[in-house]
Image (tube, rainbow, N blue to C red; front, side, top):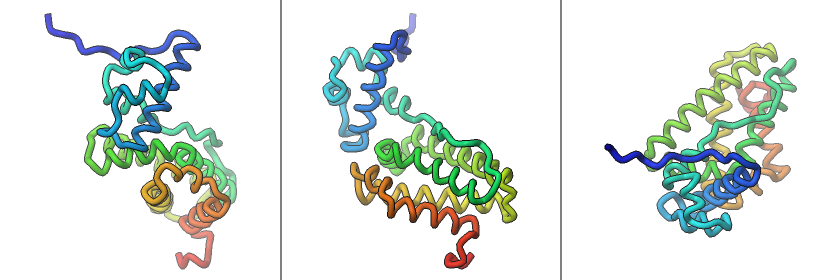
Length: 202
């Protein structure tokens, strides 16, 4: 009989859910701080306050941990906007998810730059989903411009801002992204991408 690869297990109790979440949080932090290769299961277990076997119980290997972190955003924003000003608010709120998960962005970016297939696939899938959601928001807001082109500008502008922050500020990027002056800049560039700022020369 062929050997079966260990399977990741889903938690069945509130305590198990909490343990799994602690493990994922520890992995997210360590991958961001030390990179994928510089992080071991033992490090994750130590930071999460559990044993090595506890990590392996939920995640048989390090790649299983990494893949579990690659969840698409739950933006927690309205799916429609009645005006362009509302669209700016929704698009800023979508940016918030990435700002709140800067450690995840840094870990993913490191692997994407190395060409890790799962990380590259996550980036492509995430880009396609983001563009689709942005296009829907702009349609409901009766945006009068080229909607696919605007979604393209928004993706490249805002993802570039986040990538620059995580590469420049490392583990403190989340704090930088939450600063009022940075948030004002985000809103300005959203408005620029939508042709709402004369100073942008659109």
